[in-house]
Length: 206
Picture (tube, rainbow, N blue to C red):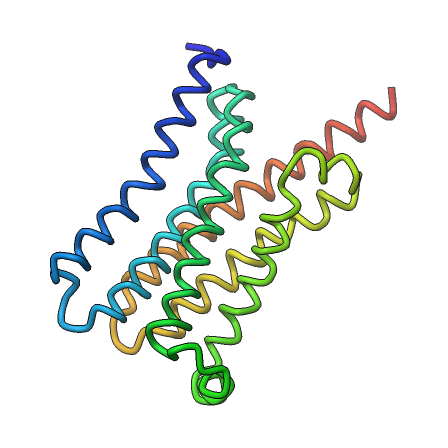
């Protein structure tokens, strides 16, 4: 079944629910005192995983649209991508407000002790650039440079999973799963990119 504008609208509604409901669930968990023995670390971990999940979904949209021949599905990438930014922002805010209590001096001390924080901060700065340039008006003004900037999503995926893998002390199964997922998705995106370049070169030779 082909996506129509109407079905695309409802698909976006579903994506909004998928993105927003886990945040509501987190609030309920915290408010009901069911966020584990260390609520601060629970919130930080929960929002970080939410950002990674949304990033997996964002990178999966293009291959899925190509495989299903549903070009309109690509119109959901910005929506899902902004949820990556939303969860990452909550993750950073939770770290600064609940863990460091907004003490910048502690942040620099933590970076020295835990370099993975710097890796995560770099990913977040890149993600912020993508979020604020994701709107159509800015995209038109940037022209070709827009695509070059938004290719940074691949670097964000690498930095994000390195940040996660490096931050855990004993449990390596979960970050290893994300490494495999991102490796697969990046390989699929690279394959699609090569196909587009090949078709473009063939067209130019005609």
